[in-house]
Amino acid sequence: MKKSEKKRTEAFDSSEELRRTFRKIRRHHGFIVGFLLLFSLCLLTATSLLFTPHDPYKMNPKASFQPPSWNHPFGTDDFGRDTFSRCMVGSQTALLVGLVSTSISLGFGLLLGLLAGLSSKWVDEIIMRLMDGLYAFPAILFAIALISVLGSDVKNATIAIGIARIPIFAREVRNSVRQVRIKNFAVAARAMGVSYPRQILFYYLPSILAPLTVLTSSSFAYTILSESGLSYLGLGSQPPFPSWGRLLMESQRFLTRAPWLSVFPGIMIAWAVLAFTLLGDGLRDIADPKI
Amino acid sequence: MITGFITILAVALLTFFIFNLLPGDPALVMLGLDADSEVLSALRKELNLEAPAILRFGHWIADLASGDFGRSITYRKPVTQVIVESLPPTLSITIVGSALTLVLSLFFGILAFKRHNRWLDYALTLGSQLGIVIPSFWMGILLLFAFTLKLEWFPFGQYAPLRTGFFSWLRTIFLPSLSVSLVAISIMMRMVRSSLLENAREDFVRTAKSKGVPERKIVYKHILKNALGPIVTLFGLQISSILAGTIVIENVFSIPGIGRLLLLAVQRRDLPVVQGVVLWIATMTVLINIVTDFVHMLLDPRVSL
Image (cartoon, rainbow over all chains, first blue to last red; front, side, top):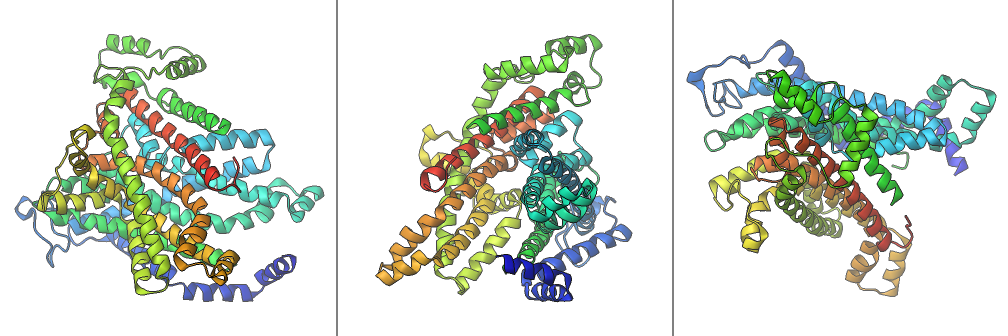
């Protein structure tokens, strides 16, 4: 155990470790597929900021309910708006919601986790029991609760989903900190009087980094799913701004008349979620020294 | 048990915070911006909004403990009664969904394990990957289109209570249950497969093989039994996520359960009902976790609470 640990720390400093990681990445097909899916999605989003094939907001009653064609790859909706362009713009919502709410969970989770892990038993108990309580709220339920008081808005939905997922990050950070805290090098650092910020930065963060990266990636997937669910209920993005969930809600009324409207936004959601899930699974395998 | 109780207390504290302490006037939210100021102040008094927060929390939790969740504004009935009336469809979907999850994930998981590294294993693994990323409400819409609108095998927007007959009951909730549990089935299946594979490498399997124990018995009696602990824990988590999933899925199929009630209450600004449903689901989640830990302990003598 000790010998292998020593070996690992030595390898970590050398370029050998980097080369090994790259080899692992190259051999991990899931990770590569996930990366490509995410890359293409980001490309699509970036394009939509500058240009969409049609105006996503312009109504054209003459062209309503057109089935998929070269001109309208995803067809048109009841107002004759191009669904492909609307899906492109919808990817902005998805990625932005993912980014903001994951940052909220990551930021506060890190803060509370470090606080609980490094403080006395009582502070730890209070924080972690509160986290247990928060964890009992499924993200979508917590979001609905907040929205019922603050009003439906994609901003409120994003913040609520972010808060609901703080416990997942806080637990991970707190448990890793507790594990590192009793190791000899951490005890030595405390005995030498290394300042808290330095301890956190150089002693605790390195060991938390790998699990946090994995969590962050899967959190994106979960967040995008939750937001699309909320928007589907009409509690997330508000019209006229398109989001994938909202597109599905609006199209369900025309399910028999224009089924394609209910197909493509769902594929977009699955695409985004698949990208982040594969990436997360890949990162977990790559970070695992046993594989 | 004690941690469970403390967790429920934390749930209550958070719920109270959201519905009573957040900036915003609950009376104004309920009555709308153009409400009469006299009506507003009367409602504020009725909701006890003028007392200090800590006193209000005391009153609030005492009311909850005696089963009083307040009165619904739109239904003009106690919230408890409104929730209880909406429970049967939600519980039915959760139970049928959980049963589907358990049966199908074990079936497919064991199948994939037995055909490890053959095409069926790959197909099942790929299928479960897709099952995880497809949003349940989209699955619901697709199933609705195919089986309700096109083939007309299932009715839409109805719920038939169990007393009207098992099959008419199952027909109204089968599609929602299937779509809501698809993610759970996929997650569980992967877990069953991988934990079976892991346990198959253990020494006791080699010993059993060399003793000449038949293959079937090794799989079901030795490998599966040892893998069961983590499977049960994950299954508990999946039950709570299926319960949470009913919020959205009931609205896809227009089934008059808790999820539908919750959305209508949010739209009609019936905050007491929203609060009641939120508390109920969160508390159920905690209780399911406690029961799961308990079952885990019963199944695996190495684990203690």
